[in-house]
Image (spheres, helix red, strand yellow):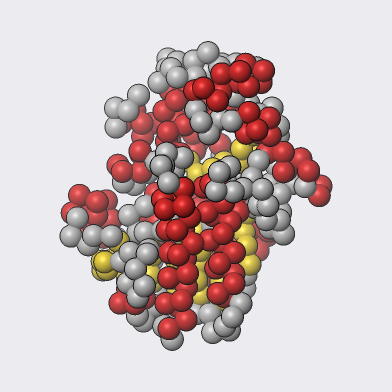
Length: 351
């Protein structure tokens, strides 16, 4: 897309992240100055992929130390910015304390950034990276939805601290964002709600992310006996970044945007890889639901009987027409996303 006002810096929180790095790349390509909010501006290893982009692209990058839980730590980074992209939020299923590791950073971090926007007169738009997890909790929610499709009007109503705590963190964080936004009228809020994000990572650290965890299991033989027919939506990380840029610089953009390209399932993801990567032990069949009910909870605590009942062999369906019509989004084919993702694992010798 073409960004018209390139004179003001743009803030990206969590700038080293999987999605954020592609947003930074898009901004630098447009010749924009990026104020990158990071935990440690002196960690050359973590910033290497961003510095590499800045060396070859017309835009500039400046680093600012910030902490999701530290009030006022985004003040310097936000100064003079008209657009803020808030992407920083934990994404993991491996944690000991859900409140401390997921809920607090997501909710308090969102409040911290948006309350800083209230104090920064230059800010006109804030784009928050939310998730489809704030819209639904289990695939069964899509079956029970009006028209059997997820829409931007829906909210996740069944996640909790003990069941799907990541989804709970995204729901609470987005609700907090709308609450703060509605109490003022100087800047407007847009949220991007991606489904399961796949696609190539610009930074090696993202290859250890939750998205790649499932990909690894497809390719390393863990699921050789079969994959669960787990209903999910899938979207390419490059498309998610593009959606953020369009949301940030399209004056008419407003509200929430489901950012999902494909209604899919885990077995279908594996099937898209067979033609090019068939030499790897990819699953070729679906695991029976009764078997998953039996062994799932023993293999993975997140694979509870409730989770299996409400997600396996249940189609996932979301309505992405709003972002296509309003922001002109076009999505990459599933095969391209999957092959590009899988190749990253091979290149990093992770499978």
